[in-house]
Image (cartoon, rainbow, N blue to C red; front, side, top):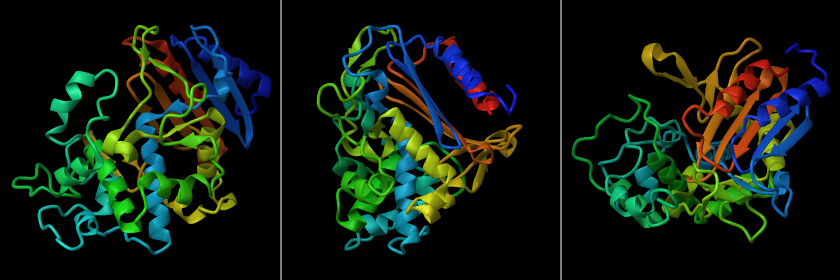
Length: 342
């Protein structure tokens, strides 16, 4: 698509892609220089509340909010990037076993596994609905502070995606501030950015989209993250998600300018040949019109992608109320949009 594509051409391309979404509810939201297009569709009958007005679970993409919270606390001088999480979580009884810093936790280089070793036994009975609900905050913290005899990787030496690490980071910031994580996020991130339709817990009936299993018909209960809130509890309307991405594009127009700019800088490489680049929180891929920064997320019954390209001042949100199936054409089509849209 030409960089000079008209608004009508952009809308047509979005509609063409949305038609590929084999999900009860699907949303595509696009912002170019602050001008938005939000389209909705799906295989199910439209809900009572318009799809574009509902809040959607974004799963792991919530980690970008957690990282922004950390960046703001560091910019304000309340925390430092190299503070050790164990010392902040247990200041009266410092533990020598865990040397992971806040930077290690936010960049997935802490050496922690994806989930604590004792997580799976309680999660298996509810694996397809709410696997995190039965693992509370105190267990997350205890699992982190437990003496480590043989850490698999020394902090800072290897990238390994970790919901455990993201959750620990949230509890560390909460312990340091003396506020629950969800209240801290609301005060420092959601309210300053005007995200009134973003939450960290299920809302009243009719406010949240309903997730579904891969059959597209069986409903899934609303997400409960237990002690892993910071790793995936955020849900938001498409417009709030676009507002969040527009803040990444134009930090100077927000109260969180310094923190937002910190999140855009590439800080590490990973993978074979170190071909994959990351910022503190965003996956960072090169493109013909400049790099695209993105983060995907999934819950038991919903899927999300948040992406933006600073050079073209554009952002894209894709949401569905069903996990993608093998061979589903929608994810590939959405990624093609990231390359093609002006």
